Image (cartoon, helix red, strand yellow):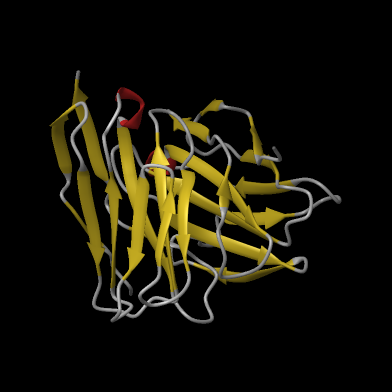
Length: 113
Length: 111
């Protein structure tokens, strides 16, 4: 069964460093998303991406964040200068169409120290 | 912004019991989704609902899209130990791609 895959599973970084989280969405899906979940809290939307551009973003997704689809299979989230409060699980998701069920990856646990 | 209120926050039940949880909102949603999350894992899609009044089953799980489009419930019948986890409702409004998640219901089952 096709699935969304994310790497790495766990990333520890120093405050102020840049991190890149990587995702391979399901191959025939057209919409890609990043969500985050702070420990013990609900899942929060960050950004959606369609047709090689951001289609929707939340207030969390400020200038420190960027997304890219560098080739036909990968979808990345970059945090330019990490802060302690960026520590969370980051989930990539994809869907065939907008407004339909999104399938999530296993997540990357980001720890900023 | 849109908010989903999910209840109960946690449930402690005996194996074999039925479970019911729900989500409500003051906003109208076009799509309701129910996910299950195990510790350290990503949310796994259980059921998707697209029409007001729709009742959909997936094995022992049944979910309904409320007539007002502002609520949804999930029932689990005859619970088993592997049902343990956190269940999230998620909604999508017309024209938006993002999912708005509820706070989750943590299900614990005593054997």
